[in-house]
Amino acid sequence: MAGRFAPSPTGDLHLGNLRTALAAAVIARSLGETFVIRMEDLDRVTSTLEHERHQLDDLASIGIRSDVPVVRQSERFDRYRAAIEALSSAGLVYECYCTRREIRAEIDAAASAPHVHLPDGAYPGTCRDLSEADRHQRRASGRQPALRLRTNGERIVLEDQVVGRFEGVVDDVVLARADGVPAYNLAVVVDDAAQQVTHVVRGDDLLSSTPRQIYLQELLGLPTPTYAHIPLVVGPTGDRLAKRDGAVTARELLQRGVSTVVIRDALARSIGCEPLGDEADDPVAQWASQWSIDQLPRDPWPVDRFGLPT
Ligand code: GLU
Image (cartoon, rainbow, N blue to C red; front, side, top):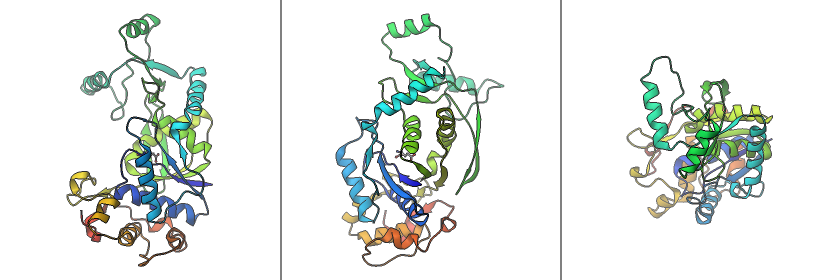
C-alpha cells in the first residue's frame, strides 16, 4: 500500500501544493502506507533539476520525505510507450492532427448545435475516423500526429473520500503529444500502478481528469486506487491562490521573515492537525498519530486567515 505526491518540477511549490503534499503524507503515515514522491517531469522544456531540488528541499523543510528513491517520469518513457502500444494493439488508439485552436473552434461550434453532449473541453472526435488518404494529406502538410484514446462517451462513477460521489464522461484523451512525449493521464496511471499506489491524494483541480484515469486503468488491467481530492487554497479574493496574491511559495514567505515552523504549522492546522510549535524530529509521524481523514476540512482554505501574509 502506498500514497504519493507527484509534483511537476516546473517552479517552486506554492502553499496549495505544500498543503496537498502534507495531507498526502499524513494520510499515508496514518494508514501505514509507504509514501512516494514522484517527479512528473514529462515536459523537458518546463521541468528543471533546479526546480526539482527546490521542491524536494521545501517538502523536507516541513517534514515531508519520500520513503523510497524519488522516481522521475522522464526516465520511464519506455513504460508509457509500452502501455500505448498495448492500447493500440486493442484498436483503441488513433492519430490526431488537430491544433489546439482547431479543437477550440470545433468545441465552440458543437456547443451551439443541439443534441450534442460532451464533457467540458472534451475532444470532439474530429480525427477519429480519418482515412489513410486524410492522414497522408495531413502528414504531407508537415503535421505530426498526437495519439488519442478511442472512447465512446463511457461514464465513470467514483466515490471520492473528500468530495463524495463524482460522475464523469470519458473523452478521447491524449496519450502522447505530437512531439512524442507521453501525456500526463497515461503516465500517471502507469506509474501509480507500477509504484503500487493504493491511495491518491491530490488537489481537486484534478478531479475532472479522474474518470479518464480510471477508464485507462480498466483498459490496461490496472487496479484503481482510492481517491481523495483536496480542496484548493484560495487567496484573499476567494479565487484560487495565484502569483498575484503576493508571497505564495514557502521561499517567498521565508524571505518575508516567516519561519519554516510557522509555515509548517499553518499548513498542518489547515488540514486539521495540531500545530507542534517548535522543531520536531518527524512532524508527519506526530500528526499522523492523532489524526484521521475525517478531520480534513471539506472547504477551500483561505490562506490569509491563518496569519500567513500574501
Ligand atoms: N503532476 C501533477 C501536478 O503537479 C499532479 C498529478 C497527480 O497528482 O495526479 O499538477
